[in-house]
Amino acid sequence: MVRTPPQCPMDSILRLLMGPWTTYIIWVLSDQGPQRFGALKRAVPGISTRMLTERLRMLQGAGVIWREQAETIPPAVTYGLTPRGDDLRNVLDALGDIAERWKADGVFDDDDVGAA
Amino acid sequence: MVRTPPQCPMDSILRLLMGPWTTYIIWVLSDQGPQRFGALKRAVPGISTRMLTERLRMLQGAGVIWREQAETIPPAVTYGLTPRGDDLRNVLDALGDIAERWKADGVFDDDDVGAA
DNA sequence: CCATACAGTTACTTTTCCGTGCCTACTTTA
DNA sequence: TAAAGTAGGCACGGAAAAGTAACTGTATGG
Image (cartoon, rainbow over the protein chains, first blue to last red):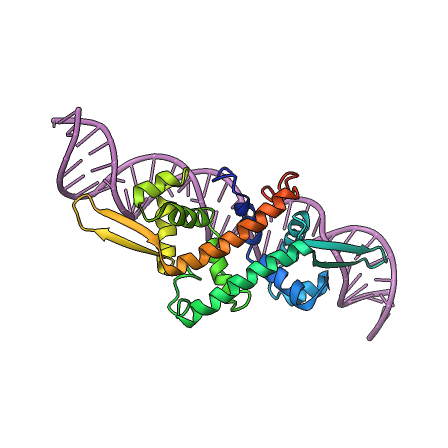
């Protein structure tokens, strides 16, 4: 990671959110409440185990989600949003509003965004 | 790009912002006002010509920035934020506030975010 | 007369990401 | 007894993203 543009903390958050699945995971967690690993995987169709694990670790490391492991024999691990995660959810909502407005203006119809 | 998680328009915006330089470009444009290509390149230290061009094209395609080319002989091209870009700037500000709060809590000190 | 700046483009190379498949260790169900 | 689920870890490999470098063409400054 050579590129450390500025010491912008906002950039760190963005880098955190950036993964293709990250926002979706946060969305599910905030919409459906705390979920277990398997349920989360089913709720985010198409994500691989590897990706889900990695993203969850990263989000946990950033204090955005909590992880609760029940030491039962088939271990049951549950993830949920922390207050910090709620912060992000709010920004995501704001972004969603903008997206709605843009969509009404037809930004996404003639595709320039999704495919570079 | 196989992964098209949902048809979430918010996701499209995030994908737009994701590039390592994108937010920084928007920031500069909103902070210093419209800039010419060369000035922008100097304002974003470390970015390559290629990246800057690509990002600008993408942002322009999304209607986030405008591009004005003066057909003088050494062509002078100026870029600036559109109202749509201002929308993003606001979200970025909100994100910046969160980042500040998190930083105060020391999220970025014990690094888990920047380096995975 | 040669270098430089303007605003890129194109090709080449490198790096990183991300999906796939195989493994754990135990339990419940068929 | 065998298959499947639970929550991942680890390694390999292909694809995509990003960096580097060289090139464009004109006009101006030294």
